[in-house]
Amino acid sequence: NAGVTQTPKFQVLKTGQSMTLQCAQDMNHEYMSWYRQDPGMGLRLIHYSVGAGITDQGEVPNGYNVSRSTTEDFPLRLLSAAPSQTSVYFCASSYHPQPTLNYGYTFGSGTRLTVV
Amino acid sequence: SQKIEQNSEALNIQEGKTATLTCNYTNYSPAYLQWYRQDPGRGPVFLLLIRENEKEKRKERLKVTFDTTLKQSLFHITASQPADSATYLCAPENNAGNMLTFGGGTRLMVKP
Image 1 (cartoon, helix red, strand yellow):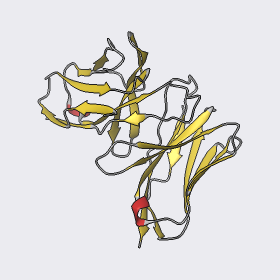
Image 2 (tube, each protein chain N blue to C red):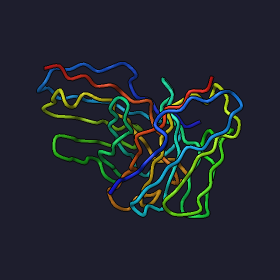
Image 3 (cartoon, each protein chain N blue to C red):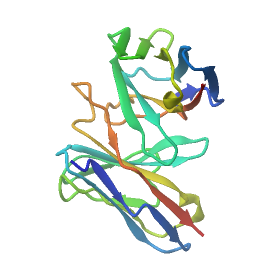
Image 4 (cartoon, chains in turn green, brown):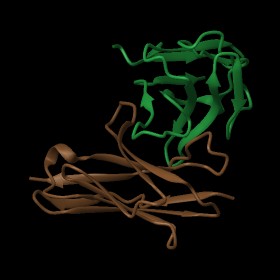
């Protein structure tokens, strides 16, 4: 099992450019989510999905779009990159948002994005 | 608003001692709380989950307590080792039950 795979690992964008951060999981997890991590701010939820075809906003959704056409994939789109979106982005998945078993989230290794 | 507080200052301890990390939360009542470990340049890794009706949970050298009256969780690592050096994040479930909210983490440094 590969777990949660994020691509690319590093990216530099110019202000105003758009791009898609890819996230794929091979564990048949229903729940997927995107977080950004900034120094002193902790992990903040951007968007999440409880299953294919269902997405919802998290704490900091502005400037980002998501879609969930398959169980495996959950791409994050930056519509018009801004320097404030410079961050490390993590994708996470789990069997269920409210675990009935002792499973937590499985995180990817992250995408480090710099917007200049 | 919901707030999670973890000590932002690094915790330095000697190898073999017990490390205790604190997580305080305000303005909500999570049904469960999770703890994660994060190493530099890596994603968080799940360690333990504790539910509101569980006072304590153990896994090998790890122990987590959950006091819903004090709105606090304590994370203990006994017989600490230099390999335990990392940042530890607490994550209480939010009120809607469909997402985790993470604290800023506490960096633990275990010196040989």
